[in-house]
Image (cartoon, rainbow, N blue to C red; front, top):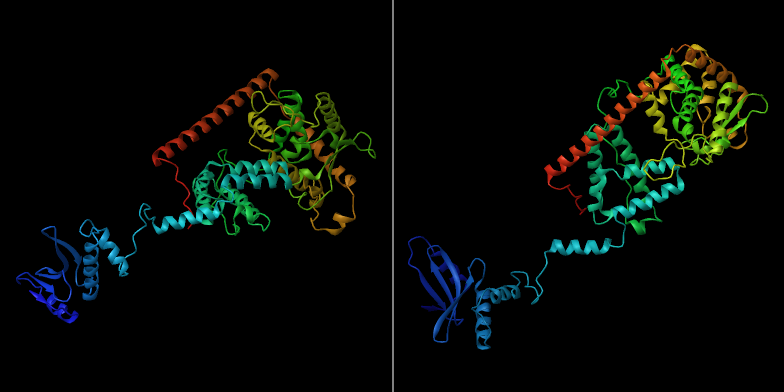
Length: 515
């Protein structure tokens, strides 16, 4: 039956759709082709027209979704398009366009160009915006170039090693370095910490912070895209308690024994190790300097002490001090060398000059086959040789032996001890008198300590009973082979564990893009 429908009448008819009712169609007398179908399960709008001798229908929607006016508008559009021979009953595209014109749905995409999700469009826009900025690799190389320009060579080598850690490899998956967040870096640092390398995690954070400080500089920001530094990046707190090393030593507390100091000097003098290594070991024990100034010492830094015949002077430039270049400190740290030690050093100077090396201890062998061996002795080689001798002490433990013996046994003033072992010689870095008006090397104040200490070292060396030289060399060679085999096994185990972890995970997790 045909009824001139109103919205109020539609609401009444829809209310009749209850269980048990008889289904029926109500044609809208005010809109040709529009029908309200009433069934027990609900009502729906339908458009029906005769076309080509057959009745065709298209379901428009429910009264809950379409008001009477909206349904009449769609029916009118259907009659118009049918008159113009536009496909109305084929698929949902035509109906979708009608809903879009009424503002009920989003408009369909242009023909031939499927629409992209809004999130994808936003991501593409962000990628286009960040495209001119550095990638992680480019940012790393730029920062390392800055470190090489402004810091010590050893600092550059250290930072290069840290920034190429395998744990940082996922950062390469970031579109640009400006997308990397502090949270992402914190997770990496925390993972290193959780692996038991707590000190390394702290060091990693201490390298990443200045890198981001550089990237966020006003003069660099236009290339890096980094707007904020990583001042808040830090490693988790260290685990409670003291964690001894594999050899049982507690870091920072072990003091080399008198026998260890004497044994190292005695073995060096006996010729059981390489001659240059032996001189380096004796210089290490006798002067209490760090291993790096020993390994990188220049021949030109050793000169006779004119005011004290028979003595020499080791004059170390600011390059050997960690913060001297940053403070524009041009002072040299001078250590007087007693006659016996000076004679030993002079012999090494002659051999170094004959070899054409500016270093007192030329590089013993190239790091890689075929590489040039024209550098200096590796600082690590000193540690390795001490291990080969069966010593528990490290080079730094020998420094503690000097400082403790001079203060506790000889009762030498703490200030005098600092003049020898401290490259700042116990004077504050901001001391105006020292920084701008004084060039005193204080050799006369240091000489008594050096004379007393070196005499004590000679006593300890003389008290050591060494086995036959051939037996001693064989013992050292055996320890060296065991150390190298253990090192190779440890490296192989670490690689295998890493490979198994990656295999278990499928692929290394990529760094998520910052929103």
